[in-house]
Length: 428
Image (cartoon, rainbow, N blue to C red):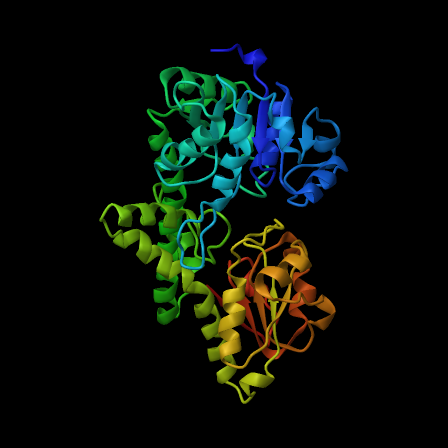
């Protein structure tokens, strides 16, 4: 096993996960950051990160070598693959990016190198899918000539407290020696320490159940919200009361999007189905969470139907398009579900988004972002994403609603007592 100081790191994929990882390693060891997008590399070299995960100072003060040239991989000894693992339109795992990354690394592998995956996958992908690709393209044998590792990413976009260095890192390898080498590398940069998993499959499984558990807990809250709505009581009031008990888990209802919680459970369920087991609880949670957007739209329609205004004439404004507050990430947003459901009733809703990219919104969802200047005389205003900007502007935003209009507060971010007289208020 080579000495730590002899390692040269290469991080493949410089998105929400890979960039913080690469910058952290670059503080300790020679590190190459590789991404197939030349535009992304150029922006990072100029000190701009469109994910808003790192600052200009982080980028201008680093020794990280940024490149889109695969030839720069040949001198590296320790490869970290941090590319997305999305799902397709049928909610099946799309291993395309991780396979493509393996094909990029394979031709540059040398004897003694380690390839460690951080991308979320179902157990078996690293060794059964990626390993053979690396072997074929390198002419080397996994576990003998080069080594495999898996260390699941735990990046939480927009979270400046639980950063890469401050979260315990699960590590694993395909041999005792590679397991120790992977742990040693991460321990050099992760101050919170590492947890050595018994095998690569254990580490893969640990990652995929983290977000599955969270998805199910949120699904429970969403189902409770549906029940409490029928009872005429506010879900947040119930949760505030229940939360006074020491062992009550503080989850809240809401739209479940993004590239993790709304995606990862399908990796586990797909593998379970291949093994002949139909997971009932996990898929039930997914169904509940996927129906929240249409439910919110139906509530809007119920409020509008109680007046004399024709639905097609209703003016509805939605605040936010990103999958969570205070981040620019538009991936797997559930706001389009609200828009689509309203459209079925003949309502064309406007969507405003201050952080996400307008071109991406148009390309991914066919949505043209509106200006807040268009938000006036509204019949319904939906606080869909609780960006701090919206919270700070809440008085002005609420003034844009017609008397008798409706405030839909998806995340219960507003104080019902502060809603102006004459407006109707509803929260999930």
